[in-house]
Length: 145
Image (cartoon, rainbow, N blue to C red; front, side):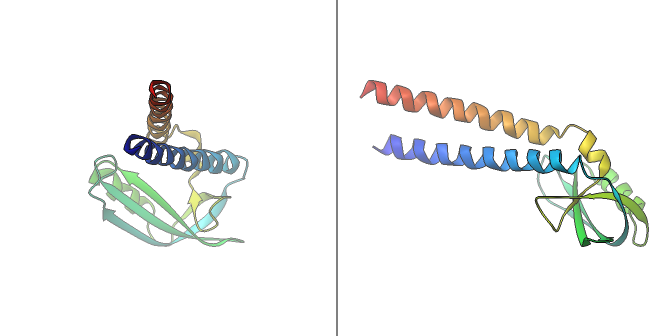
């Protein structure tokens, strides 16, 4: 019985992970259809996250005509590119942004929508492998009982 509970918890975690990855993919695919909007930077903040995949994050707030304030958050593996991004997107500068259709307070950069999001693909692969493994273990457990 304990094995089935732990497998149920594992399966629920995998399903939630797949839902998160699917939602992110859906937001990006819908955003590709939206024309970029010229927006003015009103605030930029760089912070260290402590994570190994993205050690630094730069959060940029844009004043987007017709949408109000939208936030873009970008992760970097090293501090150097994060500093460069922060300097290129200084307060008062203008850049093209694409509003996120599934999250009204956030935005994408047009270049992000063209590039492959490797962490997202890795997360999808890991979640799919875990889903397959969990299904195999549950089927095997039921077969042995």
